[in-house]
Length: 235
Image (cartoon, rainbow, N blue to C red):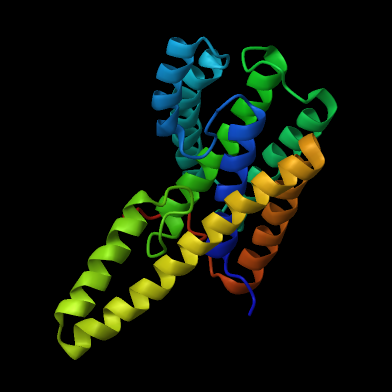
């Protein structure tokens, strides 16, 4: 079965978060709110990476704002979804080149680790933005807490018993959410395994997956192209 855009995004989200955490002294590059916890741990235990963790949230927010504004001003002939996915690709490629050239990172406070970390944070911010704007019907691709909660609620409802019409809708939603969680978990596991096996060369995979995502989007999704800008979506 051919992977979908959300499935590939979820895999890359888990993978990038995993290798970022392992390589960059506990930096979450996709799930940036997790850095609030690791900042506290770094301050208490004296570990490195506080600066990168502090920078992650403002960088994440700024990139999302810029992505949203840029998407409103693209030429009409440029599909917005495909264009944003294409813009994310060079960020992951730059991060891979820099990580392979400058890693491994003994400290998270050095300029090389911060540069690589913020490049990955920027790429994941674009991924979050494109999901919220264009893939609102799909589960989140970088954060599984809410998805897992909804899966458990739906399972409880199925056990309790719901009307057949509602049951069909729940089954459909469960399939989408379970695929998202499985893809994210597979990405996180793959990131950990490859980091352990090949070290900094594990950074080479995310741009490859991003390229595959871009190709998949071009062939399977109809992106909006009007000059009025992208629509909003909530999950």
